[in-house]
Image (cartoon, rainbow, N blue to C red; front, side):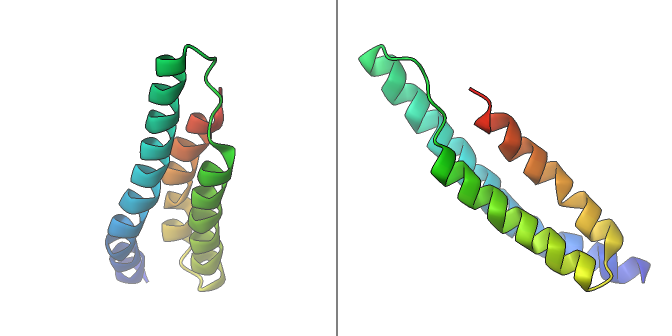
Length: 87
């Protein structure tokens, strides 16, 4: 069972990198645009919420597949995206 968790985590690294990278890109572009127009920063909640939903759905599927440690590790990208939601 230990190897199944390890393989699942390694297989999901590109997906998690894409989800967190998309969130960072959306937040960075919104922050840049807010700085350019001298308006207060408002986090892009629809984009970040979608990325959080994808990561949470993957974690739920892993939990349902009894890969508990791999599902628990999905909290790391979820927390990274949640911190971007704080304005």
